[in-house]
Image 1 (tube, helix red, strand yellow):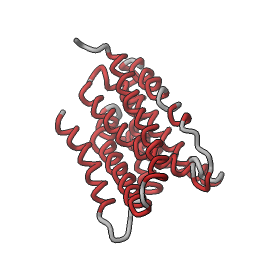
Image 2: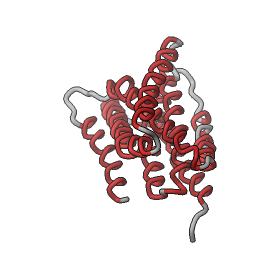
Image 3: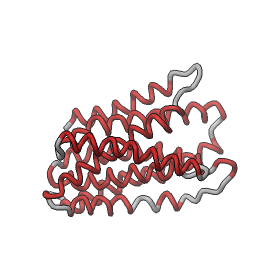
Length: 236
């Protein structure tokens, strides 16, 4: 039985968003149960896996789909605007202490991508499924890192805040689905903005956290993350 587009968009965005509280819960769980050396290995590997998934999302989905909806000039302009915009926001957050930087970065990634997901459902459902999987892979380590950052110095970080993020994704997907074809350039601009922002975050916040002395697990985690995205791309 064929699934109605709006239910497909809502369902895929919800499943993608659920990895946010899952990642946050893992950050709480590992503090109490994992030995120190494994905590370090796991943390770096999770960050690297997320970086690989982010790179796959940009290279295989967001940039191709976004540039198809825009002329070359506007596509490049929106991509650069995304990078600059995220840089400004990152600096503002850092100036105020930076304890919720990862959480806000996760939100800024998740919502534009969920909107793009909704726009893809009617025209290209297999690609929409791939995008949902990549968003979920991305949200898992971002939820993990955001919770870990917010709990630094014994600060309390409510888990319900991460669950609150989940329904925002279906809402953004519904908006993307409801926009008529004439608004395709808007969706393209959102994808290019998200791509520029993700590339900035990878080099500013994520990649610097990956290296670990005398261990090849983190870079292999990045390969594995990109491999998952590549596998989904090849399957469709």
